[in-house]
Each structure stands twice: as C-alpha cells, then as structure tokens.
Image (tube, rainbow over all chains, first blue to last red; front, side, top):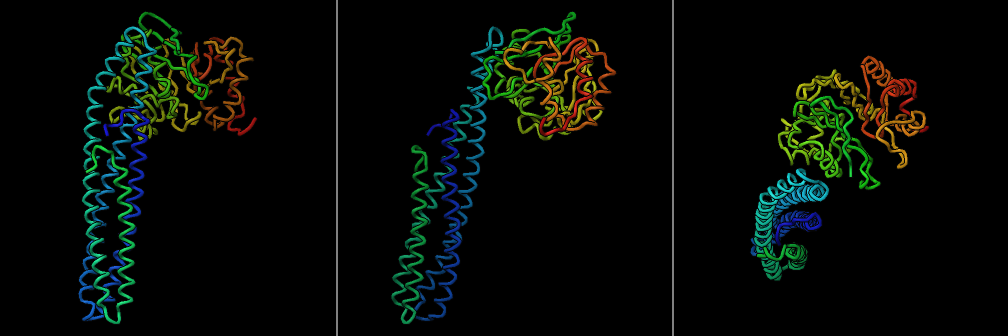
Length: 207
Length: 246
C-alpha cells in the first residue's frame, strides 16, 4: 500500500494499526498464560519422574518459547507505536494540505501565487518523505509478524510433541495429556491471532 | 470570505481589520483579526483558528504582502485565537508568537518550537512593530488566566480580545457599533458568562480608563469608537460578571 495521502486513507491506516495492536495485546496475555502453564508442566513432569523425561524437556522448551514470544511481541508493539506516530503526523500533514488547497482557491493575486509555491514545495518534500517512512514501517511490521508467525509454528510443533510424550507418562498420562491439550489449544489461539495480524497487513508488504 | 478594512491609516502606519467571513460554517464562531503595519513590518493579532486560515490569509494578502508578517500576538490560548499558528508557521517558519508566559508550553500543542514563542510577563511588555512601540496590557482572567490586550498609543487603538465581544445576528453585523444600546444586548450574556472575575474586571476598567482610546477592537463583533469606548468601559464596570445564567 502506498503512503496514505488523504486524511480518509490515514484514518483507515490508523484503524488498521489499532486492530494490529489489539491482536498484539491478546497474544501478549496468552504468552503469559503459556509461561505459567509451562512452569506447572515442568513441576508435573518432575513428579512423574522417569516416565515423563521427554515431556519435561518439551515443557522447558515451551517455557523458553513463551519468553521468546513475549520478546517478539514487545518488538511488534514498538513497531506499531512508531506507525501510530507516523500516521498521526500524516493526518496532520493532510489537514495542512487541505487548508492550503482551500487557501489557494480563495486567495487572489500574489497571495494565491505564494500559497501555490508553498503547496508545491511541501508536496515535493513531505509526500516523498511520508511514502518512505510509511513503507519502511510497514516492512518492519510485516517482517516482525512473519518472524513471530514462524516462532508460533514452532510452539505448535512443541505442543503436538508434548501430547505424544504425554502418552508415555505411565500413571501421570491423563494429567500430562490434559496439560499438553491445554498447550495445543492455547497456541491454536495465538495462531488465529496471527492469521488476523496477517490479514491486517497492507497487501504489497505481506512477506 | 473575509474582507480587509483599513480602520486606521497614517502614512505607513496602518491597522487592517479582517472581519465577517460569509463562507464560514455556522458551527464556527466568527472572529475578527487585525494587522498592525508600520514601516513594512507587521504584527498579526489573534490570527484565528486553523479552519479560517484560508479566509484570513486571503483577506490579509489583498491589503499587504503576507511574507512581511514576522510577528503574531495571541491575547490568550483559545483555539479560535491561535490554532492557525500551525498554518502561519508552514508559511513562514520564522514567525515569532507573543503570548502570556503562562501559555508558552501549552500553545506549542498547536504548533511551534521553543524559539517560536516570546513570553509576555504578567505586567506586560512593549512590542515593537516597525517604527511603532505597542503595549501589551494585562487583562488576566478576562477571560483567560493569562490574557493580554494590545494598545497602540499613536493610533489610539486598543485591541481588547474577548472584552467587548458581541455575538451579532446576521442583520446587525456592521464593522462599527452604530447603536450602542442595541449592540450591547448582544454582548451582555457573553460577558456575564465568560468574564470570571469582578476584581479583574474592575482592575482592567481602571487601567484602560487611563489610556487615550479612539477605538476598542474586540475579537468578536463590532468595533467601538469615539464616545462608545467610554460607554463600553462604564457599562462593563457595572456589569455583574462570573454568572452562570442571566
């Protein structure tokens, strides 16, 4: 998507960023939940002893995954903050442009020429600057979303493996199965959030 | 569209009044802007809100080269007074804005850098425009807590911001007050509600009574001239202000 030049486009862009931010908030709270779940799973695996060694390793990996996910989400939050600042500046620019255009229409003689010259000077600099800034921010956001989506895919694999390992948990098998199903469901929620995040990407920067 | 009227002219010393924007939407309050010119230098008084910048700029440029406006005076911080600062700075980033020190960290939310603003101390200061020395006259709490009016001793004009303002119906929107008693009815409820301090009002009346004033120019409504100036000050001194209704 090109840089939003009109206030309506900038308004749409701002709403898109807000939707991304809402998904990020939901993933951050889920990642925190996974962290706690992984800690409980580690204790459970310790109690299960020898029969849940594999499950214990996977629980440790899932805990690390939750930490990595939180870190990635902090990066995404920073990127959306930067986008909000840029889009706000664009909204301001487009308001100034609209007022200059009205002035150009109303003014006469030298006043009209002065405003015309100012508008074209601004047009050359700010539009090009805005295009570059917005494109760079969208690229960064898109890369972060793609990287995080890969990390979530890894989390999903870990959850599936934990489910398989739970089957070998002997007397603890039912409890381990319950925990690994919770992992699978929760990471499934995160995957759905990422599908929404990808949907909210401008088409021309989707990685 | 606003029109510019020369309300004072003596050689290269001029006052232009930009008034009555017929294309202004009803939901925006009507404002007057004034331009003081001397020796090719110019000071724009209460330049107005952003939405009326096109009308003000167009009116100014019919009577004066807007590139020579290097100073803006803001009586106080209201959006209808100074939100167009962003547009004037787009046009000339070097413009200096004189306003109460109280607002120097608030008004930059509209536009401007630290060096855009020249803070006026509470007791006022002189502002030089070309060969003329104008006086920022304290008018605190009328209605803003950091509020100034501007007096030109040579032209004998007092720019009085919201003091003297009247919300005029379309049929009575002349440049000057022609019938004081009829006019003042449109000013009464505004002053009762917007002017919050009786003490501040009395101080102001005493201060401006000592000035030699031919014209009292408010930011809204018609200009008082001649005997109507003293009539207004007397009326205002007796008005019960800071009243929610009435």
